[in-house]
Length: 385
Image (tube, rainbow, N blue to C red):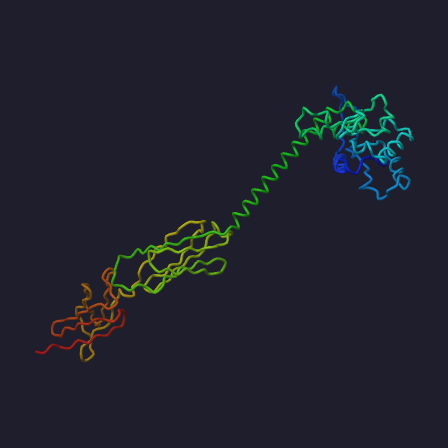
């Protein structure tokens, strides 16, 4: 037939009808089915599906004569969603009667979702037409309340499997089908749990990957202390990320600065870090950016105030050899070509060092040199005899 079953129900039980249709049609009948004695009672070449008709979803007609009679004739089974609602439904009674009139009394399957059968009161769940067809209560059906001792998660599913065993007309295969269904159910739960855990881990990773972070810089001046040297106007630290330069301006050589709101994708990645300041050696290095960590950047003074060099000549412009040059306690002598070069240690450096140049037979010259550097020419005058 076209349909395995036709679901008859009252509109107030629509959720039950939808659920039952969805679950039945999603079920794959096993290729091999065994009975309670573990005997093979069914063996097919491939798995099959159940096809279920529910008029609200499958047909737009509202009259039995307009189309539902044909759908009823095309269904092998009539599943009646039994409840006090369907017990009062004339429409459900007509569908039951049609099945009875076409000689299919033994293919009517009650699926009791609420109420009590044959109670005769307001809790009655069987339609009068159904009760009249089975006055002795010999009708076989499924009641979800028959599994009251089972965990709640099993009750509806056991009723579903019981229904399936009756639709395929192998009721004694229920235990086999249930064990198989239960195993598949928990496998599905396990896969869903694993999938959920994987998604949560992925989301956590994505959040962590994209979450902005901070990176702190601390300057560490490794040169000896010298209060005579000027403090630079600014200390610039530049961090280069994807060709974009982020600059920190610090006010003290032992101060700290923080790069904020760095894109999370740069965490644990290498980046270029450079430092610039007047009077200091430049720094150009590669660092690994770690979340909320501090890096100490070593800096040191350059030789801006450390080298004093030039040439000593006499009044006739001739080079003076062997002249002594003294600055801040450091001395050197001029060469044959009159040149000299004196290095002042960092701890003695000054922007304007005191310089004394002397040689026997020449007048001693003393200067407060405005800055230091190369190519300073000094003229010594011969001493008066």
